Image 1 (spheres, each protein chain N blue to C red):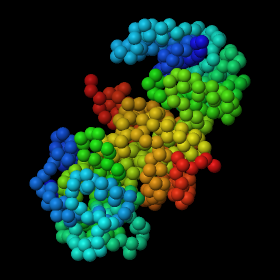
Image 2 (image 1 turned 120 degrees about the horizontal axis):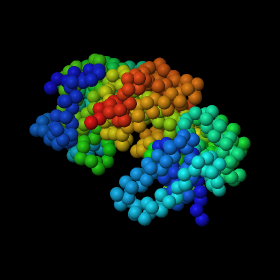
Image 3 (image 1 turned 45 degrees about the vertical axis):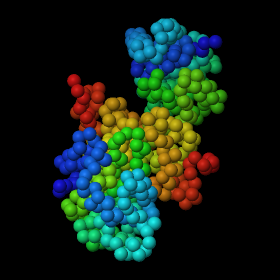
Image 4 (image 1 turned 180 degrees about the vertical axis):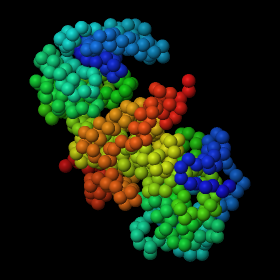
Length: 279
Length: 285
């Protein structure tokens, strides 16, 4: 099941879970190999970054074996080779010493968070492990009002081997995700778009266009957004949004992505749009 | 005690606004500068109400009583008689609107609110030609007006607080949810939403993902009802491009509002979306 995952229209789209299984629910693919990876508790969620909580929640809801570094003993971490390492923190990509991955078993793969860094740049921080690395972004899986498996975005760094791609796809099928394969830029698709929307909302607040409440109401009622943008920023944290925008800014070196100063201030001061009183 | 509104300009938005007011129990005086358009607008309101009646949302007698609230007028003067509010939805041209507001300023009752449904023009500039800018507001509805709950109430620089408050109350009386916005390009929605489309077009252009994938991700990950390409096809790629250009130019070519060559190409090629049978997606016969 070699998947190319190149740029542009992908012939491999037919191999994403929702099209292999005609009714679109990856979670229907309960395969015999499901135990092969996850049953042996050789999956580790590493770190306490933004997506860690969502991975842990997903594993728990599926009743699947996993290790979370936050709950594991140093002995266990030191003595285990993991088949799938899910990194959740991205830190400062310029600092090569910043990254300390757990041990990767032969044939294993590492999922790295690409909210604020492109897959290729993120893979490079893994040094010799770069060829085993696949980029992802994950947000809170939607409440299961629909039978579809929650969606995750993944992207192939230039360094990644075909084997790493296959391994990750198999893993995501087993866990019960619909994988959307996208290209090599920070923020993949959703994180990038949301950050730009929130940035614009913050910019409107800077100019006193409307109250925070009215701004959120307008986007929900005028264009059916699922949440107000300022409410969304409060939930995710201004810091995540600033990170994504900074990542885009340095990737493209374009003004377009520069974080609104208000967002930075809110991050520094620990303020929220819907708590803070207007100046 | 029925209130009366005048609706000037009976295209899609004007007809929808007139229907909204009449459904809320207001008398509505209709005028369009182009012969026959007001009549067509009234006919489209009748069709829309009939559809509601067929779905059981209103009774036959309610429909008759709503239709009875409209009055077709031959002149602006006639349309403005005894109204509490005038709202215009004529062509998006600043000079033409300014001429209209000069006329409204002369013909509407002294205390009437003069509202513009403009989505892209400066309310303050329109107000300046009215002779009574304190009474001029933006009252920006969303398509289709009878359905979409939001009204952006726009404060021109010289609009009085009282006028804003009265407009808020009228919007609520018409079963809408008003928000108040400063008079800036795009107000709230058209400005803040720009990069839902803009970033998506960039990602498409750079092969980050294709149309279907982007739309699926926005729904599947983000929970959006419609993805950006589905939405552009629905609203009209040309309409979306026009709004984008408007906000972009009004902000003196602020880079982050920049339109994308893909949309220009599609419009130039006649690929406008659903209404032309083909856009980012193809639509059946």
